[in-house]
Amino acid sequence: MGVNHSRAQSLPEDLDDKYEEYKKTWLQVAPMFSPPGGDSTLGTVTLSRAGKYIREYFIDKSPLSILEVMAGNGRASNVVFNELKDSIKITKWTATELQAPEQVSGDISIITNCDGVEAVSTYGTDHNTLLLISPPPSTSEGGYGDYFAIKKWTELSNSEYIIFVGELGASDGSDGMYKYMMKHPVWTCVDRKMVFSGIDLFGGAIEKEVFIFRKH
Image 1 (cartoon, rainbow, N blue to C red):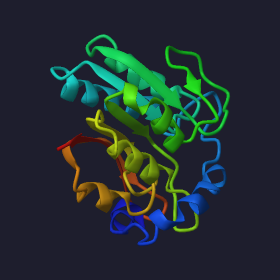
Image 2 (tube, rainbow, N blue to C red):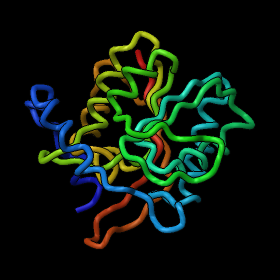
Image 3 (tube, one colour):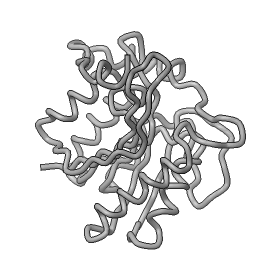
């Protein structure tokens, strides 16, 4: 079906009313995205390209203090960090993950057993940028951790940016998130760049992108 079909979906109308129900499903819909060898769901080349585009946008806007949610084993975190660290002043990078995967070695360590909403509630006021790299896909049957984390992030007065890497609202992130973010009353997409494109097994488009949203 591809990314275009997925991005045409809308969020469930009763999503906010069912927060506790969805929260119970987060461990079930978020399997260990840790391919053999400690790799990431997005390849190193794709992640490096994403880091370069993020660097290009923020080169004259740093410093950044980054709160990352759904960070998995930290492989993606470290690849992106390595692309930024020499050019962007990063005062803090806090990476969190609901599960407790075996972490890869690097500069970024993962705070485990911490879901996205808990991460924003606990660490959000110390950061200005929320980062999501290939968060687990979700459907009406469960998930939406990305939605609830962003909703909580939006409530903070210090929140300035959201960076999303992957197929927003398709194979990365929850159904309906593309339309939600693109029409958000608080967040504006100020930059987006393609980092990988291809065709899936069903002939649909694969489009991995970097999306940068700024609060207005």
